[in-house]
Image (tube, rainbow over all chains, first blue to last red; front, side):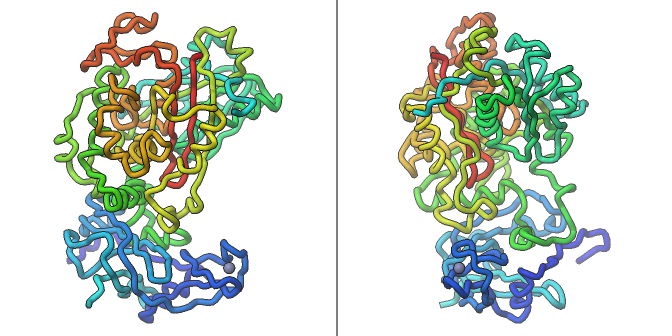
Length: 140
Length: 405
Ligand SMILES: [Zn+2]
C-alpha cells in the first residue's frame, strides 16, 4: 500500500537524444541508436558515433534478446524510493546486438538469477509517455 | 627507464586523526594535516610554493589552506576527483617543478567523509527526477560505488572461480595490520567468518567487504632530490608514476570489453617502464581497498600474480605482515580509515623510512620488534621498494613506485 509520505521513484526526464529509447519502450520496442556511416550500435544514446564521429544516426529496433552478463543484489537502501524493494537486483545484460546495458531482471526470484542466463526484454510503464526496458528469463 | 625516474621525492607526510565525528571544518582539518607534513619535512611557511588538492565538492581549496598557514604560492590547483588522485597529483607536482613553475609542492585531501558528504550516503544524492547519463542507471536503482563496481567482482567469480572467502582474506589481513596502528579507526582483528557473516550491502559485498567512511585530512610534500637531501628524513624517491590511466569507457565501464579487467592493465607498463623494475622487486604494496575485491583485482592486474589468480594470491598469506609482500600495512581504507588513497602513500613513505608508527616504543628512531601480533609492530624488515595502486573505479587507476635507496 502506498502512503502519502512515501518518496517517489525517480522519474525519467528524457532529453532530445534519449527520448526515442524511452518512447520506444512505451510502444513495446527496444530501440537503439545505430550509426548510418559505419553501422555500429551505440548505447547509451548520444549524438555522435564514438568510432567514426558521424552524427548520421538511425533508431533501429533491437531483437530484445540477450544474456545476463553480470548482476548485484541491493540490500542497502540508497534511494529512499527503493526502500520497500530491497533486496532488488541490478543487472548488466548483453544484447544479441553486442550492446550491454544496466537493467533489472523481472519475473524471476533473485536466487534464480545467474550469469549466462538467456533473457528477453519486457517493458514496464512509468508514465503516459515513458516506459523502462527490463528483462525476464527467456522462455524456451 | 624515464630520465625523471628517481629525481623527485616525497619528503613530508602528515594527517589528522581518523574519526567519525571530527567536529571541525575541512579547512581546519586540511590546515592541521599540512602543518604536520611541513613539520615532518622540516619546512617552514617559506618552504612550500606549490599546492594541489582533490575533492568531490566536499572540501576546502588550496587558497584557504595556504592563507591560513601564511604560505605564498607560485602555483596551485584544486581538481575534482577521489581515489586515484594522489598518485596523479604527484605526477603533476613533478611536472610543474620540472617546468620551473615552483620548487616544492604540497598535496592535500580534506574530507568529513562520515559527518559530511558520505560516499555511500543517500539524502543528498537522491534526486527525484533523473536525466542525462543517470537515465540509464539510477532508474534501475543503480547509484552507489558498490553497485557500479561489484559487477566486475561478480563476473570475476563467474570466469575464474574466485570466492567471497578468498577476498575476505583482504579484510582479515588489513585488520591485523590495523591492530598495530594506533591511528586506525578499527583496531580489532576480524576473522573470515566475521566477514562472511556480516550483513549484505550489495551482494556479493558484505558490510565488512566495504571501507570505513571517515573524517580526516592527509597531506604529502613533493620536491626535487636536490632539495630533499637537505631535509629531515630519508627521501622516498619516486621511481615511477602513472596517473588516472583509463580503460576505453569510464562513464559506464561495464558496457565495454572484459569487465574483470581494470585500469592497471594499461597503467602497469607506464609505471614499471618509468621505474625500470617489475612486480617481483616490490616489497610492499598499497592496493586501494574501497572494497576487499578492489585490492584483489588490482594486484592481479599489475602482475603480482597471473590474471584470474587474484583470489588465490590474496588468500595465500603473501599480503599479510610477515608474508612475502604485505599489502596496506596501515590497515588501509578497510580498517585505518577512508582517505581517497593518500593514507596508503603516507604509510609506504613511513615504511621506507623504517618509521611505521606502531606500538614499538622506539618506532620514531626506527627500532622495531618485528613481532606482528595485535598491538605490536607493523614495520616490514628493511623494505627498499614500495608500490601504490590507486583506484577511482574499475576503469580508472593510478600507480606509484617509491624507493629509499
Ligand atoms: Zn560510426
